[in-house]
Length: 237
Length: 313
Image (cartoon, rainbow over all chains, first blue to last red; front, side, top):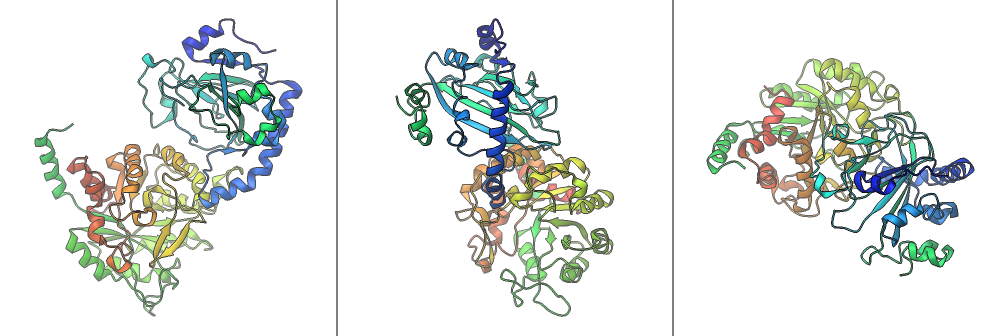
């Protein structure tokens, strides 16, 4: 059972994020961890070659077309432990954009700077990051500026050193913890100073809109989707 | 915004700033006196003599240059570079090379630097693990080189390949005292897109490069300078390489006017290599690209920064 804050609506509106401890747990967490490792290991040589050729960055590594490879990954898109929140924050009309199954190697710099995902006048853009292993301080956790999803709180500027961004919060958590956040808000991945990569799943949603509706985006899994999921994934209108 | 009066004052300052080309190559034909490697880029009969460079510099108002070793990595292969440095010590400083398989890189570095104007060394590969492998910089093949550079105040002239870019921040963090000049717009070529065209490098790469976030991250290390050089190799357009303007300005925002250095990559930018804008075009490039900046800022990129960072004084 997910530990949902009592006043999550207020938290979402005021702070722009919600922490879901144990969003994944037990055997289900292990199933996702194992599937992630299997497919990441299989895709690694191709990614290394991409880095060597100059087509890919060594900063982070995503399993390509992950949902085509594993039904358990598809099931994350409308997982009952959080989909109610996604539905609520997408004004009861969510569009699942994409899932990123991401590995972040240790490095003295972050693979991404501070940024919002979408301008304030764009469609609401809920996004969730699920840690697949314990993430402590300095271990490459997600960071967010509480309240930065609200236009009146800005403007924000990109500092040369990520850690000097005023007012930010770095999120630690054990494996299975998820951070649901508003894509208007400024966020980044902090520096991973451990000796091991940090693995997580990032699920990206938006309020359903024609501009982002792309029936080809998830064509590779369309036959495996229920009618409800076809609408969620944008395969149908 | 500065007033017009202030801008004119800055331009006056710029006119008296030294102009330094921070990335040039000279080489002789292969001779007994000046042995070097011969290959497709540098056939044995080709030459770019220092006298030609000096005349080009004088014709275009360039005061001094940093000579980057080309044509081999052994001590013997540096004969022409050392000759140029000893003959014209008032005009040049130099960057040497180190063989990947040398037994004692520290001895090699010290031998080249002790009696000449060699102030540092150019590195391509870093000799570390592939991405996602455990990283211990003490295990890098080039760790002794960085360590010696820190001890002796040598410059590292860096042009890593894309597979090695992820290793650079580890070294920058470990050696904050080492002066690092990151070559050619901080674009690190990959294996599939490097070729020779008209006797000079041609690198088909998307811009911004895939490793742009590493470039952003590396700007936090104050010992790093970005070279505004090598445009001809990356651009799909003729001078002034308008398709690179966004990237050139991105570098400027990251590093500021005081951490950029201009270099021409002579002789590969001359008419001899089919470059219509020629060396003169390179000399004017900073003014063209950073046209909204003050004369002083452009002067810093065109030589003022190199004078201090490379210690030309």
